[in-house]
Image (cartoon, rainbow, N blue to C red; front, top):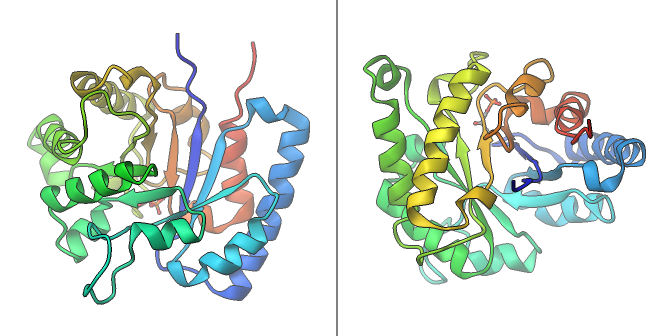
Length: 261
Ligand code: 13P
């Protein structure tokens, strides 16, 4: 059986300032070090924070030597050129960023990102040797109409459609839209049902499906993290509001520490 190291990623969205970043990351780094000492490095989940781009340089300095990594919230599908307001893969690489969230429902909704556009971004990121965190998820109305699997299937297969056969190094994040920022969370059983379904979709595309991580996102917090992370196909979390408090985020990280029986 493959053991997938858990991944706990914080999506800060449009929340940051030099002062609040420093406070948050100092607390997070110290707490993370303490957990490492208590649990042992090999039992720790991978931890990632994704701040807004203007803070990448300062965050790199704050995270130096901490073992916590920094990722981006989106990236252009183009390599360079006349694309006002966009950021390229090579810019992320100059800041040593290896992970990037793609197809977040807020980008799909507010920037009108389509499945096709997300697939171009995913291909660009994988080709650069970086890891995309590909977000998928249904609305409340779609769930009520029994369309959850159809929506997830379309989004997952489309996002991966331009990747070579047997691709590796992709993370999928199941983020039911009705659970994002609402305080409503999928129950562990609901999350597992969709994650298991996503695993099956990945198996159609790559022999590495068993090794790929599938994260849950949507009001994950210190209280519900442990039950969600105990599900066999929930390999971590993509966390919004609870990632803005070092103590809340640390509680989620602690819930992801692998405990040997
Ligand atoms: P919340 O944790 O605030 O619900 O946000 C989840 C999310 O959108 C992470 O990408």
